Length: 65
Image (cartoon, rainbow, N blue to C red; front, side, top):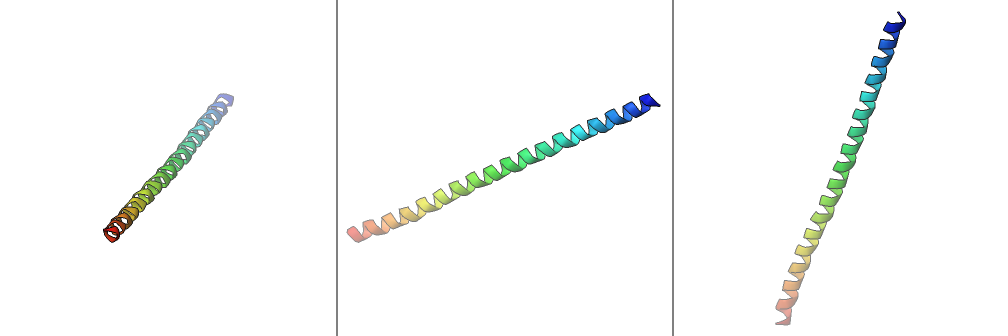
């Protein structure tokens, strides 16, 4: 009986460890996704700014000529 209880306790501990590891991996993935989204948003904004200022430069060059 003691051995059975020991095995049950060990199995519960193992399942808890697996759950903890899975939860940690989920948190890490969520953080990575958030970082990628932030980086992509920053890059997208930089591209939009470049397009905007490129158009402004072309207009300014036309007005100078």
